[in-house]
Image (cartoon, rainbow, N blue to C red; front, top):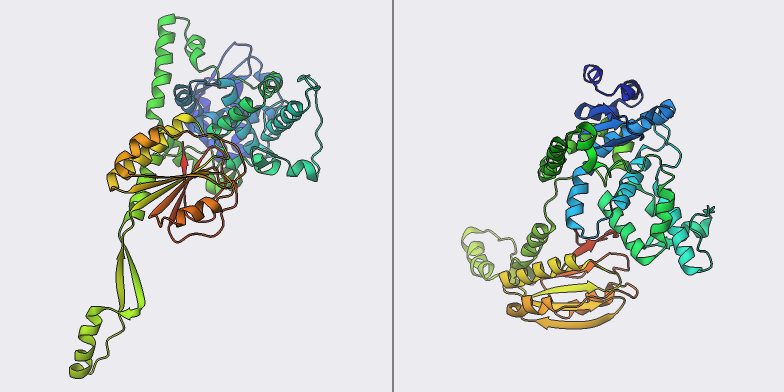
Amino acid sequence: MQTRLSRSDSRRMRSDLESAIEYLPGLASLALWCNFDDTDEDTIAFTDGNTIYAGAGYENFSDKERRFICLHEILHIALCHTSRFLVLEKQDAEFNPQLLNIAADAIINKALENLTGLKTPSGAWTLERIWQALEKSETESNSPTKTDTNTSSHYSYSISSQARKIGNLTRAEFTQANRWSCEELYYFLKGQVQKFTCFLKILAAEYEKDLLGGDLCRIKRVGEIRNKNAAQADKKITLIAADSSNQPENNRDWQQRFSMLRGTMPELYQRLAGEIPQTETPWEQILRSLVQTAFQEQTIKNYSRPSRRWLSLERDYQKYAGVILPFSPDELKKRGSRLAVALDTSGSIDGGLLGRFLAEIAALCELNQRNLVLIIGDAEVHQITEIEWREAGNELKQQTYTGGGGTDFRPLIKAATDFSPDVLIYLTDLFGETGDEPDFSVIWATHGVSGNAPWGEQIKLK
C-alpha cells in the first residue's frame, strides 16, 4: 500500500490517504485499485470511475474532512457508480444526473458517518437531509401559502414526526443506508418529484449548499481535463463509456474486494449491504425457474388408504417370511392447470417494466400450456379474468393498469384459492396485510421501494 501511494500523481491527497491507512486500514485498502491526480479546476474532488481528481479547493478543509472526501470518492469507484450512471442514463428516457448524484452521495455519506478519524463536511447530502426535503415538500404541497423554498426550516423529530410516512416509509426506515441501492433511491426520489411539484426546487436549492455535489456529473468532461487535444478527449470519453459494457465483471471484482471489510469493518459493510455491486441474475430467469418448479407434478400421500403394492405384498411376506412390511400410504399425482397472477393497483409501476412482466407471464403460459387467471385489485378484488393460454399474449397486451386505493392482499389471495392454481404471482410493493400462507406456491414480484415477504418467494423486478 505504501509503495503504491508513493507513486500517486496526486500531491494533494497523498498525505490524507496515508493517514487514512492508520485510522481505517480496511477501507483505505480499496485505494489500491484507484488512481489519483490533481487538477487546477476550481473544485474540491470528483471521479471518472477510475481516477480521483483533487481540485484547488480540496486543501481548504480540515484533516478529518479531507480524509472523508478521499474515502467518499474511493467508494464512488468501489461501488461502480460511474458505470451504473451510464447504464441508467441509457435506460431512463428522462434521466436526471443531479438526482442520481444526490442519491449516491447520501448513501455513501450515511455509511461513513461517525467513523474514526473522519468528519462529514458541512452541507454534504445525507439520508436525513433528503428526508427533511421530503417533509418540506409534502408540507408545502398541502399548504399552498408556503411557497418560499429557499427559507430554512427546522424540524422537530417528535413521536408524531417519527411515525410520519412518506411513500410507505417512516423516517427511521428511510434513513437506513442498508435498505437502499442508488438506483432504488433514485427512482424513489424521482417518484416524489412527480408527486410533489415543489420537491425538485427544494432539492436544487439545497444542492447548491453541498460543496461536494456534482462529483459524478463530470464523467463526460474528464477527457477535457486531462487532455487539451479535442481528438484525444473524445477518445477518452469513448473509453469511459465502453467500460460500462464490462460492468458484470467489474462488479464481481469489487464485490470480492469489499469482502475484506467483513472482518475489518463489519459495521460499514452492513451499512453498504444494499449498495455493494452484485452480479445479478436477470429477474426473468429467476421467475421462470420458480414457476417451472411450482408447475412440476406433485405427489400427495393419503395415509388413510394403503398403496396397492403394499396390499399385494403384505399378506405374503407375513405368511411365508414372517415379516411385517412397514405401512405404505396411497399416493396421488396432482398436476394443476392454471397460473394465477394478481396485480396490486394500490401503487404505480413503470409502464415499461409492467410490459416486460406481462410479456414474461404470457410466455410462461404458452410454454407450459397453462391457462391464466388474472386478478386485479387493491384492498378488494376489482376484476377477475380467465384467459386461455393460447390467447394470453394478446389479452395481456391490452391490459390497463392504474394506481390508487388501500392495500390488503388477503382478498386477492382468497379469490385465487377458488381456482386452485399451481402458483400465484403477486405483483405488488408488499406494503399491506398478507394474512396466512395458502396451500399453493406464492411468488411476490416487487418493484421500487418494497417491503419484505413473511412467506413465499420474493423477487425484485428491475
